[in-house]
Length: 406
Image 1 (tube, rainbow, N blue to C red):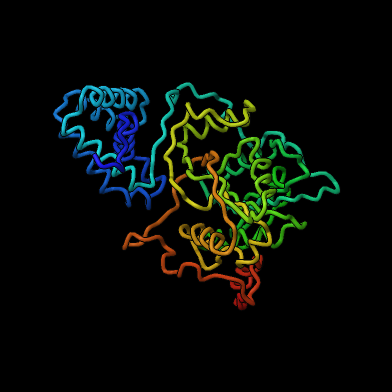
Image 2: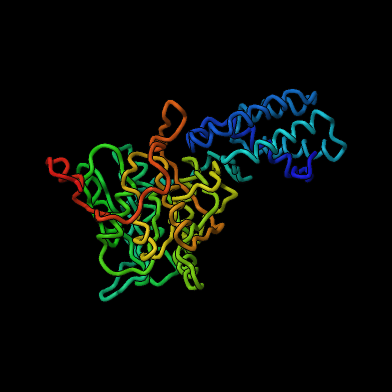
């Protein structure tokens, strides 16, 4: 093997299992159709190599994994067998399998986590309770002057999983180690009607409704939140409504701005897209059981590698310096990358390796016929400060009335 390929059998065996599981699991593509398609040819090469090892046990275990890709025991047995075979002196076919698997790992942005304690049975019934019936938690007090503003753009037209996720997100944000008066949370719901206002009001510090029919515009919603939230926060956190924050989330990320020259950061490297079972388990542990964070050994997740945007922190001054998020993006895809690129170009922009759990909902991503994201036509790094004010909450309301939007 080349010097760029690991020699540790456990690392190589894990890469085989990951490639095979991502290829076999029907939910992997839903986690990120873009990432899934980009790694397809490399994974298929692993599948072909796995069928040519001449090892009956490998063949049987690979067949079991393809039939039961979410079974931790199958993952463990296949990995153990591959390690044992490698330690006994790998055949040329096994060496070829390892090489293909490492190529897949090196060229794929979609990984796989399956904790040894994962199971789809024995769910705690408390996960099925209505999150909207829980106590709201600590509120901002009179005279509080928050230094951190958390902005959550939101829309849910059904079946309600995004609403479930947002309620869990908001309640995790109410359960933080940071002083309650240090941060405030604003939800920006963009739709044709304030569909979930009454449900959300108890759990957020500020609720903003911005009329927007048609495709969801995350960039504009974020700008609306930053511009129209009360107060003068020093730092903005742009947070996905599907993120389940741990208890030290606010305190840990805010402390990073105490270092010289820091203007913003991504708090994570990889995003763990949980399946529905794992989402319920994570919500149960974090909220109902009161854990600081869920136990990852009980979770199944599709790991998106380096996807910018689910949780971005920036000084408010740096946010405005680059004109906020690009409001030309419509639908899902590309707006987060564009914002991160512009932050990195104009600011001291860092990246950390914190856990980021993304709660399940059906995918909204759509690819064009050429395989590109729907906003691929927008030139990268082409948005910036202009004479047009960002975050105009009535922009699309005026448009629906026939008035100019600029």
